[in-house]
Image (cartoon, rainbow, N blue to C red; front, side, top):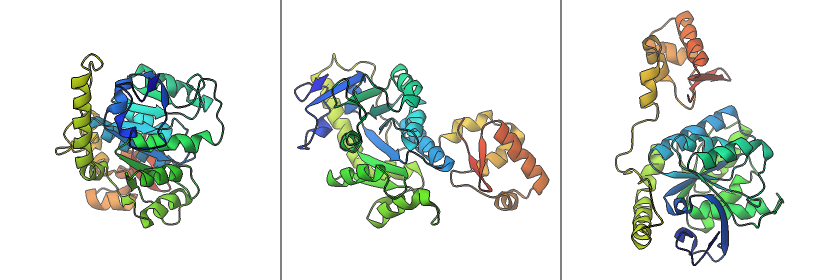
Length: 312
């Protein structure tokens, strides 16, 4: 349990008059002061949206950022799972710590705690998942973070409330665009029209957040000096001036050599057979066979006639 007087109370919340006077938590409290990026979105996203959330969380956490989200189904869930590959995720929940909502995310809840993550709530133990609790917790998600990424959202999505909270706090909001006829992306398109930064690669987020990240490091370093016993085995964020090229760089070593050229043509947006065939000068039968092998290996998915890279 943290109050505003505790050294582990996240200092990035202090400027806000509506900051929670008490935070209840599980895991390591010192993680709350690390550089964070929030990833939020629809509870019922498309498969593409979940994949993008996972990939961005994987990449950004690999760079040393903690990924903060709300432990909801859909985009939140995918973001936590991607960040867990590097043990850097924080969940802000809308119930008491003794309750898990939705119940389907109990395995994810347990995995977060097992893999060095942190779960916090401003609500007293026993607080049930009341509807008005979730918009309220969104200000903490955005307040903890240097910036917020809306990975996929329909109009009216609760993640737009988080984006509004971020705007009120002066935080940078990023949004991933999608197909103009897709209802899954209309919320993101609205945010972009209202001034959110369009991104299609996580490296763009690193570039835009370079200065806020430097400030966050200075604050975390100061906290470590003032409370040396409170910070043990902490991980320092990699320099955002030299981000890694791609999360798939290491993956490619485990791709069979005859499939590597096809795998390298895949991305998060999706490419059709004709595009890939034209680039590689492959006949359709051979290309289809290679793509099927990649699907069986769990490295590729097909959606609406397009082929996308897939996580391990």
